[in-house]
Image (cartoon, rainbow, N blue to C red; front, side, top):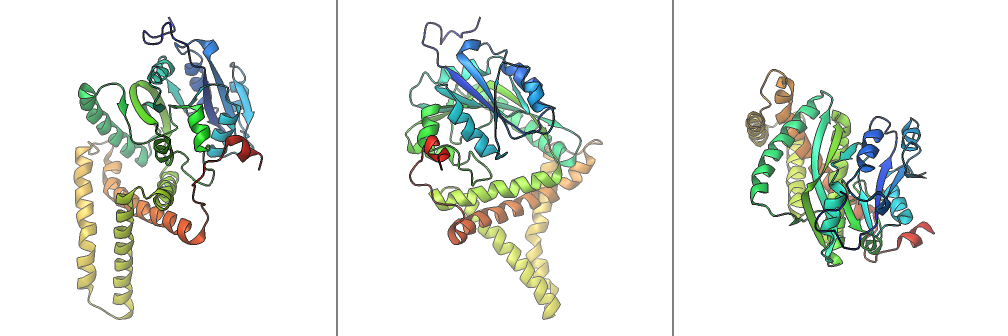
Amino acid sequence: MFLTHKTEGKKMLFVSIIIPTRNEEKFIRKCLESLTTQNFPRNQYEILVIDGESEDRTIEIASEFSVKIIQNQKRKLAPAYNLGIKNATGEIVAFIDANAYADQDWLSLMIEDFDDSQVGCVIGGQECIFLGKSVISKIRMAYHTRSKLLHSKKLIREPHPITWKNATTFAAAFRKNVLIDIGGFDESLDSVDREFAVLIEKLNYKIIKDRRAKAYHQLESALIPHLKKTEKYSKVGGILFRRYGIYKKSALMSVVVLGYIITIISLLLGNIILNLSFFYLFIALLPLLGGLIYYFGKGIELNLLNKENLTAYIAFPFLSLLFIFLKGIGFTRGVLNTNIQGNYPFRTVPFTIDSYYRK
């Protein structure tokens, strides 16, 4: 049986599912197997694989399925999404990562939520599966496990679906007209979906979170790439702060982080050049020591302290503080780049996907 009780007898919305890929041979088969076996009529949705010139077997594997394959010469994520929107024929556009797979009712549950004409975006539930045995994988797994426990308590009280504040492109669906009215994805940003919540709200649409529509995200976490991603993601926050005045707490944190770094460097130079007393430097380092003690405690709470996770437990407080500093630096870079260098134009008038691609 394809239809859920809420959609029986109603006009079905046609859906376009967009999957951006680049060298995803390890994951793409499982992703497409889950999407081609949804309990949603197969003639009511299409699957578009937007490939960034993969150099492995991604295209070969995808060709085994009934999907449209479109080449993305820019190779990046935002152009892939924009190409997908441009070629989508559905009234609803859904996004999912190539390294993810979905429950059989993922699509049907999200489409139910569009019965409300004010809903512009539906975000599904996310289950993270951390691959590999790196320190960062173990730490992220511990955080995710704790988050799941907190969510399980909330779900007892939480209705389905609920209004949400943030938009994401992982395992999410949008009305195509909303994506076009917004103007597609800003290709100058490293994190492409963070400003969508603001723009959707400006169009007077709602964002809905439906945890029942679950997808599983397979993540391979190496330390250096994750550190770079954290800094880039925070940089986008700084850009959006300049554009829309959002993320005020992050702005405050970036000021504190930057001020603290400048203070420590100044005291170090003072001790080296001017032979100042180390007492002032010691006092300045006390908050850092307090932060380490706090995160050691958090590590115990996250159950990192066991034989398998001993390395992760030792690294956890240092990495946590490093992430805080990187977020502050990234946010500051975003604010300065927008304000001084002018790399990121302020987005005031939405452009259309078609006009964008005629440039």
